[in-house]
Length: 149
Image 1: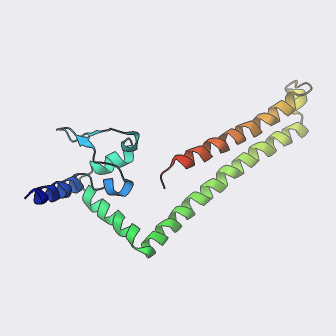
Image 2: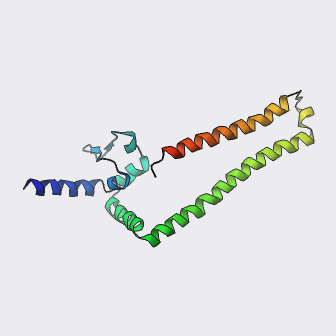
Image 3: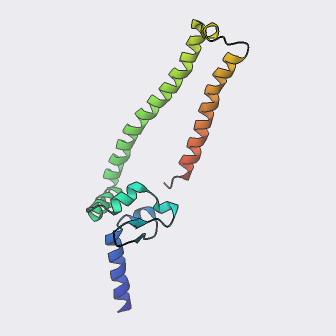
């Protein structure tokens, strides 16, 4: 009888929190108002909390599992993500390049005299661009490393 009770608990837990198996975390505690109590940083994802409390959470979890288990659907999802993210990255890199070339054009057009830059001031201004770029690249790499993929 104990095995039957444990099996029922697992089914009830999955019905309540159908997304837990997808991200490998433990069942969250809930209060009477169905609010999720965050026990770890892994549970602090607002989007996941929204999905857990969604009226159709079990159906959404089933649809997500079906996509992950079907190689054709998974390939289609990855393609859709790639088609969405790659152009956004290209736009961001283009804007960074445009920012740098605009600074170079302003040197030719007279920014040094208009802003009264002396000696190394223009070089320092140009260097700030590269420091910002290097900082953002390092920060992004560390953030990507923290993602559980």
